[in-house]
Amino acid sequence: MTASEECRADPAENTDGEPGRRREKAPPGRGRTARRVAAAALPVVFVPIWSSGYLAGTIGARSGASLALVAWRFLAAFAVLGAVALATRAPWPKDRRVYAHLFATGVLLQTVQLGAVFFGLGHGVPAGLSSLVLSACPLIVAAVAVPMFAERLTGRQWAGLALGLAGVAVSVSGNLSGGAPLVGYAYTLLALAGLAAGTLYQKRFGLSVDLRTGTTIQLLGATVTTFPLAALHGGLHMPLTAEALGSLAWLAIVNSIGALILLFALLRRGTGGAATSLLYLVPPVTAVLAVPILGQDLTASVVLGMAVSGAGVLLVLARSRERAAA
Image (cartoon, rainbow, N blue to C red; front, side, top):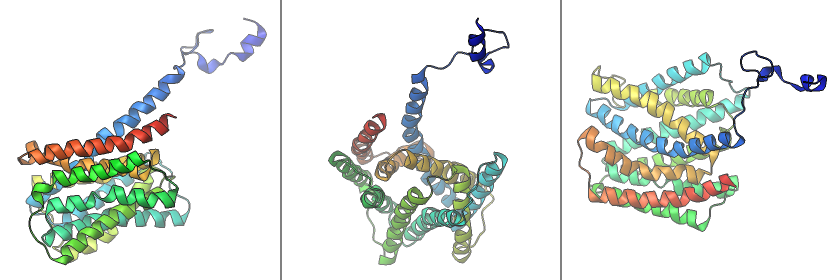
């Protein structure tokens, strides 16, 4: 080895301290492949995790827990994720305005959405109809994101969004019977507004914030605003049973932390309409998971609706993946 070659050699590349032995570098395409695999895995993981919240919530409701379950869920999630953020020394926002935006996002996505759903169901709105109304979120997000974020959706993607909503309607068609007072439907529409507005607010103000600290601040907002509602409607008592505490732990860790972080990761990778289109798969997937977990029957309409919604989601996501690959 010449003197010039010896100067160019990087000692950090040695694997075991032996001279002239270099660490093998990963092929350039390997990192790109890993990112593509991770991007493809996100939707696969997100849908069943988001769907599991309805199952855990049902188990908690059967145990006698009321809106208190939602409040304690947020508090537990806030404590756990806050501890993780501190232990891992995650960066916290430096601008006070960012805290206000994150707080508002938490109130919209958590308190308004889940609280309004709870009150709507309490006033007699059928669960299937409530699920169908909330499934309009991708269409609303996509429509608002066009002027707000200059996002563009192709005709095929708009058709996919409409097809996905149609699939949800087919899935829940057997659970739409029963009347409810107008106030119940008003609560359900408020829940839809909270979900859509919270998603758009997160995409506008929350994409540059660390997911650990940002979600912690959002959970604080949800906790502070949900506890008064729970205290006024049923109280804060939680049954100390395995079902109630198990559902509380699942909802706090898996849904309030895991599902939200996955949603925010999807929003960072693509358009709002493409990310939220996955919500079309939640009602049918929930129905499938409810067969072994809750002992419910699987109807032909659920299977057909899942196929229709799946086709719609594929139409939406196919274009997004083409752009990402380009």
